[in-house]
Image (tube, rainbow, N blue to C red; front, side, top):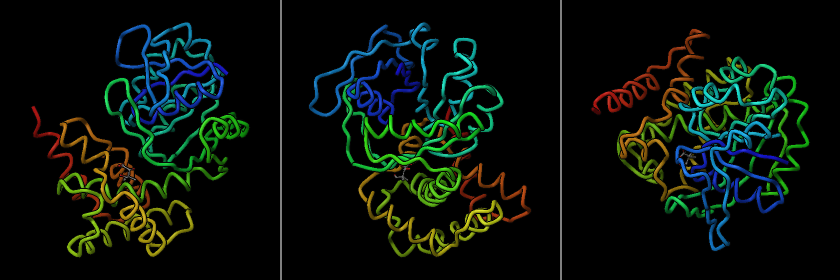
Length: 294
Ligand code: PAF
């Protein structure tokens, strides 16, 4: 397949390298301007990818979008005229809310959503380390996207484990719950994920999760605060030494994904008339930090 990876950060570079090794013709679309970019994954030979080629984008059977949520809509809007109607679009990022926007922007394209637990770290501009094996779930968002089940096999061949999930929104909501619990608290208190296991965070975590559970139930997802608490605790333990993506963004004064994580939750809560005061105060705190930058 001809595949373009839009936003080759750590996860995008991991997938670009693995899809290339699986035999696909992979190009990149990145903020960097050189016409070719080389990426070295772990100890493998570096791969030289074509970068920012309008021709490669126009010929893509599949565009894998691994940009951060706040950049997805604007980047695709700029490239819209170069994207063929049949090109499958896969969105893979933290947070929710981009699918609605992309579906309006490119209504004819098959739209597929993905979530992954693989760990990847960009060590230098050209070097990426696969830090943890994980699982990837894919599922169709619109009618055309729901017909793309074969993509699970394409992705599985490149980097297992991959499953096709016909209820991908449930998987994304479960991931959103984990991000609502871990990301704002770690960013505000400048702590590792593991430090959230300390007693003093038990009450805030409990309140965040209770609010998220109510919104998820109103959205028709079968869950409860007990189940969510267990998955949050598991991720805190499994990623104890990590700095969450939001904590890293805040430290480096980069716009965070708060609007697509806690912001999305609050928007849905308002729709269902559910009060989310604890999540709201975390949202305001992260927004305040961001607005304090010059
Ligand atoms: O955003 C992140 O950092 C990750 O999604 C997670 C799961 C919270 C682990 O750090």
